[in-house]
Length: 147
Image 1 (cartoon, rainbow, N blue to C red):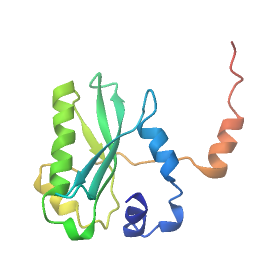
Image 2 (cartoon, rainbow, N blue to C red; image 1 turned 30 degrees about the horizontal axis):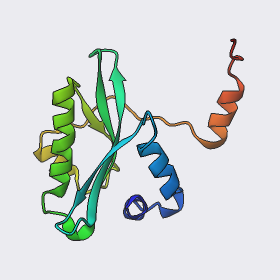
Image 3 (cartoon, rainbow, N blue to C red; image 1 turned 120 degrees about the vertical axis):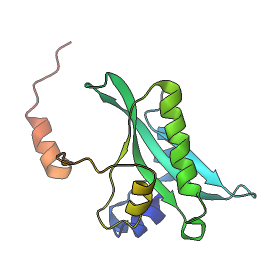
Image 4 (cartoon, rainbow, N blue to C red; image 1 turned 90 degrees about the vertical axis):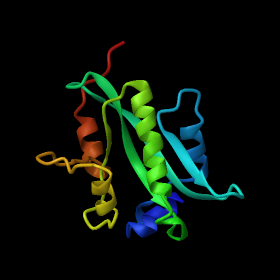
């Protein structure tokens, strides 16, 4: 479904995730990424939420960063996306996390849904990313690690 999400987001060529990578990440001895899957009565998956912990120095607690939320087209409008988000909200409340955050493409029609559940656009904060050659070049500037 991650590759289906990449297709939906108009960037299938950018998705390089393999089944082995996902299994290793989710089921490692100490996983750093977590997931929830929505399934139908026949246990056929039709949606997922993939997330990891972040930390707010201002709040002094962890939070959840929702990396991906995807519901297959035939199941959209059924409440599956809301149920997955509600599950993550429940994890936050149970564990004392104060934030559930995510980013989305500006054209995503889910914006109205997110607004309807009370999510707010975080203004004045812009996402930045280092990758590829820029990431490698910055890494080359790092000081050597001392034992």
